Image (cartoon, rainbow, N blue to C red; front, side):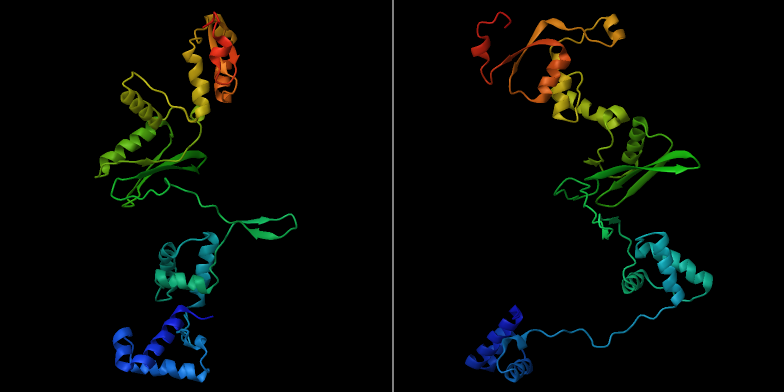
Length: 330
């Protein structure tokens, strides 16, 4: 294989042959000794251009890292107990080990990383058993933890919030965390409650302690609103929507399907059931309201109409006047 560097060296030799030494040195900044060395290699192999490919610069004899076998065994034990623990976190544990056993010098984090590489990586990966009984490695799927193409440019540009759940002495505890992506400044608080009020209080404390204004907040999707209840951010979003539209209140839906299914029944004004119907768990059918629906409407609109319990009339696609132009119901 002829590399680009070999082609360039051949071009320099041709220039040397045509225009002389001084011109080649001035044009390509190459010493005379290097030119004669390239020419000798080319002549020795009878003009094969591959001989001008750059040679490997790896030394034939490499220095070997020689450390106490007990240190190496301790690194293996640490990686077994705490799989894939990084070199920076292994270093303080190894430092305590060397002091306890009087082994003298402890390797630095960079050296620990090289020792791990020398021992084969000591990496634990998820595995699965195929239908034929073979053990295969499971490749982890990359999870996008922030908006696509988003880059934090200054402190407070994006604050990431998350919750860690722990069990201790039979009790469930929550660790609320907040990390500024640009400065990596971290806040954490431990609490027994995971309610919206607790999250709102933690976010308030972060805003008071963090010296910069927070522009964006990054959170995970969490569970459904029906399960987790009305969170602080839900209420904040709906208040912003109401203020933007200059209305007394607002409501948000997680999907377009839920928006249609949830907004159509109130619009047709049928949710005025009697006390008896509420006790029975039924909504009385409204005979005064009629909903005219296109035959190709989305399933979410059809579901909203059905939930409204109102009388409905279906017309041909995009032809309401053709079917109901003289209808008394309009």
